[in-house]
Image (cartoon, rainbow, N blue to C red):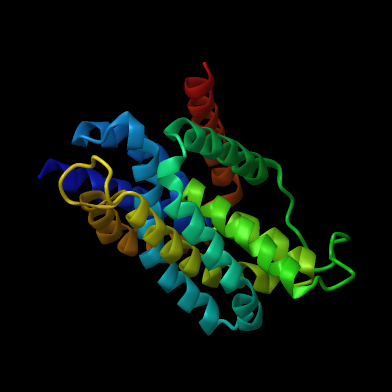
Length: 269
């Protein structure tokens, strides 16, 4: 019974930070899961797989409310969503389905690098404007977009995030206004999470997982995190207008940098 309380606390914290700082919950859930999951019988062999898969499964739920919110504000370019979706789904599904062939060490290193890059972006990244010089002058061919979307979907799945940190700069490079990049990326988070989760369910179907697991998804953690995060994310969003969000982002960036560095040193040391 105590594990439900633990995962409720994790979910509450992840939802609060997601709403407050505008980051995906995966960068909170995965590091905490790496610490907690061994206590519930999850082996080192599949520890990272389970953390990433469970994080993606929670994003299936949390991304819906985010997508609806952006849609109501007219901030989702559905033409881009339709253009990116096939590649995103293909890349996410393939990455999740092949996850059992990837050693936990490799997944950990990939997550550690991703966490450190996100930390640097949060701490030092300047706000992009709609007039940035990096806008693409030529619209890419559809095949290029699908290929890029496949890579984005695959990487996002293997790290356990919704993909916003990759999709936003890519859409902006294609010429999309920054005000619509975030909303469109939020809408793309759902197919990434759904396809990636299905892939992890498939690849983990024969793995030696504890009771109450669905493939690599650990259901007690999934339900506990979701139950709390749906309530705390709106609270975080409201606090974002009252607290110094930029300073808080830098504090969290330090935490994320240390987490990423610790994971890398542990795997490479």
